Length: 230
Image (cartoon, rainbow, N blue to C red; front, side, top):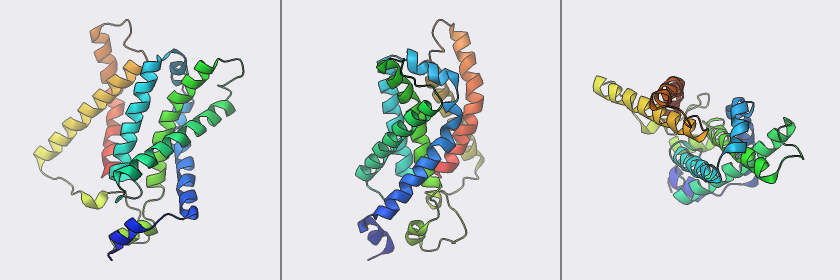
């Protein structure tokens, strides 16, 4: 039986599962802590319509599915396992988000249940993405990856899935990748601005200007995302 086949049939031990959860708990705040201190994110939990919150949760779940599928810790996992991992990460995000908001004093006993739920959901989805990244990247280059690759260097930490891609040097491919990166960054910026209500009561020109300004910063994130996914 090949190392990859044996890895597929090997069940995780309790110790390995706890290590993964530990990486997720560490990675959640590490990659999402700035937004936990952002007043606009807190306020979005108060004013966001339930339909927007549902859309936000679904969009986050889709992002987690994609990231865990192509850059997760166990790259040979089935879609069922990827879905389970994504649900677990969202659960950890909810717990961490609620705990951190409580410790920061943003959740008080005088708030209504709807206000508390809205704030936790908005923050937790961001934390869940951090959990996913932390679980995958903080554990990269471990024993399991060495078994899958067979030639991994003990002292080198690889991004998940890096060996499946080849760096493109052709100018046309580079240009196409840059255009796609900008398009994704602008699209995500527009969705984020819409979610936080920044498009309400403004002209089309103002909405486009806001999208472009946020898109400049988002492009850096999109470029980093390409590196993580490769």
